[in-house]
Length: 344
Image 1 (cartoon, rainbow, N blue to C red):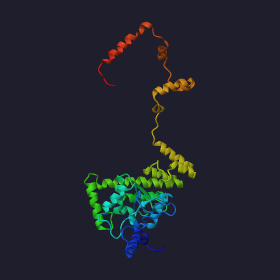
Image 2: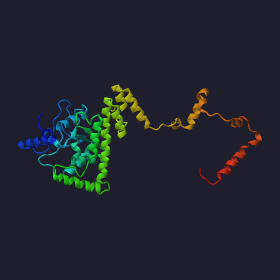
Image 3: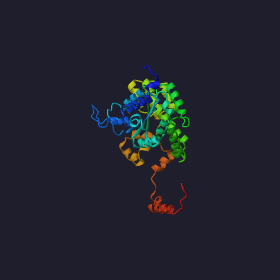
């Protein structure tokens, strides 16, 4: 526990695994050692195809990463995550890791971006590459490996806003220079030459991060009953429709925590953004007219406009027989049908 942070990083774990493989003469990925083994509780295979690909920073805490995945699994013992640390041959890495990563992302159901508390991952070229490729495929989601997630205060909002705004493809780095050249070449070939542009793709990634990070901070603020922080987050663009990890709405969270005034505020903010249509929007005119026969006159009376005296007299006075001729009406309508269409 007294060791420097780098001793607890994923990179340190990778170095230890590589050293062990060299000493034992093991060839292949560390994951292959568990081929054919079964979970002692569920009986499921310990290794195999993983539906969730994990994008993370090797310089961040490995224990925090593992704890984050445990929380994300939510008790599912057979949940599988693809982590490059275990699925890659550390002694003989692939000749083109960019192609390998693309194939892994394409085969995964979703990509989980794990951000560390300090935001180190947002400065790594590999993490940006994996995240933006996943975002284009609609597979990306985000979690924070810190015990408290992204936080639940206005200060946390400002910190993460600064980290997201500071995203920069040019200034981001990769450990191996050969990887960096391949990643930048991929960006130029795929995004620049096809008219998207790296800055445009990066802007979409920033927008996605703000939505996800702000939303998770908002959930934390609601759980804490911090109305001021909630209002600030909503003003900054957090979604009022945000759900927690169990699918509960913000209003349901506030209600369960006993924050009645906060619940009322959230309800008002949610309803303010919805259209309020008249009743006639949801029914056909014919349906409304037909239903009036079943409604008492005293109920319908307030909804009708009183007729003026002249109009009422005209309707009340029957027309003389000679003033009304059905044939004349038909002829008149026929004459009108022959007129040119003058528009509305």
